[in-house]
Image 1 (cartoon, rainbow, N blue to C red):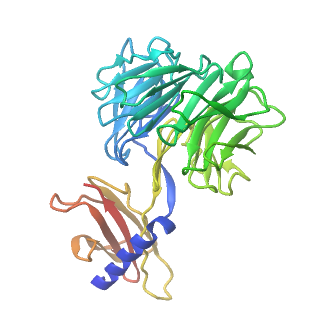
Image 2: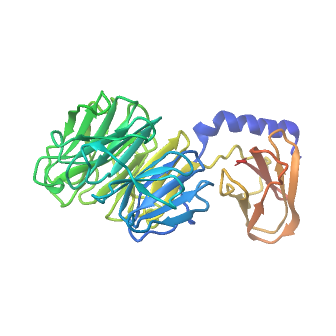
Image 3: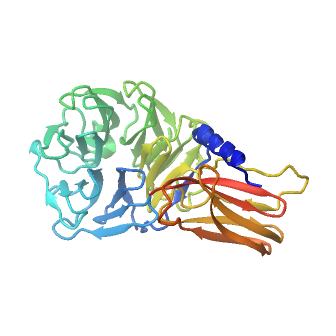
Length: 438
C-alpha cells in the first residue's frame, strides 16, 4: 500500500539527493528542425524559453524546453549568415552575422522584422561570438580577420566598437565574469586566421585594454569557443585546418582565465564545440562530424554514444546547475532524470518489469510514462501529489508482456510542482518523481 509516510519519505529523499544522485543525460530534441549545416548559437533566458540561430538565416524558438519549436526565416536584405545570438527577452534578440554590411542586427518581434544596429567608432566585419552579463552585452569577430570587440552596457540601446588588431588578427568568442573582467579567444600572427597561433586575451576594464594570457607554440591554429563550469574552471576549443604530428589540443584554466594549460585531444579532428559538466565529464565536437566524450578529465576521449545524432557540435550553453543545451545539426538537452526513489518489495521474485523516467521532464502540458513487462501481470498506474494524496489513477488492468506508453495531462486545477507516478504489478512497485511546470 502506498501510504502517506512512504510518499513523504520518497519526497524527502528526492529533495535531499536530487542534485547529487540524479542521472544526467543528453537528449536529442527531435522536434528541432534538422540543419544541413548546423545551428551556430543557442541562448535560453529561462530553462524553458530559448532561441537558436543557423547559418541559413533561420531562427528557431521554444517555450517548452525544446519539445516544440517555431521556425522563422529571414528575408532580404537580412537573409545572411547568422552566427551568434544575444537574447534579451521572449521577443527581442541581437544576432551577429558574417555579413560585413549588417554584422549586427536586432529584432524586437521574434524575427518578423529586423533592423541594423549602429556601432560607434570601430566597425566590425562580422560578429562570431556574443556573451551577456546582466545589462551588458559583448561581442567579437571576425574569425577571418579584422579583430573587433563590441559592447553595450544598456541592454543593446547603445554600442561601441574597439579595434583589437593590436592584440589579435581574428576573434571568435568571448566570456565575461562580471561587468569588467572578461576573456576573448582567436588567433594572432601569420597572414590569416589559418596560419597563426591560437590566443586568449583578458581584460579587467570592460574591454578598453587587453593582455595576452595564452599563446600557443603551434602554428596554423586558432581559438574557437570558451566554456566555464564555474567562476574559476574553464575550457577553450582550438581549431586547426591541417593535421600535424603533434595532434589537436584544447586548453584549460583553473584560475579564472589568468593562465591556461594545453591538453591533447585527438590526432586529427576539426574541433569547434566544447563543454564540460564537471572536471571529469566533457564533450568536444565540430565540423569533422561526431561528438567525443571524456569521463576521466580528458585523459581519454571516445566517440559519444549519441554521436550518430549529435553532429557538427558548435556550441554548448550552461543554463543553470542542472541544465545545458547544445547546438549542432539539431538541438540537444543535458538534464537530470529526476529519479527520486525506486521502491521494490523485498522478494526473491526476479525483476520482471522496467519503468522508465517520464519524458519530457520537466513537462508542460503533458508527459509520457513508459514501462515494460517481461511477463503478463495486472498493472496499476497512479499519480500522487507531493504530500501523498492520490491525484489520478490512469491504469488498472491485466496486461500481457510488452512495452506500454501512457500520456498524462494534468487537469487545469492542478498546480505546478513535484508529482509521483507509481507503476505496480502483482509482485513489484516502482515510483518515480516528475516535475510539472505551469
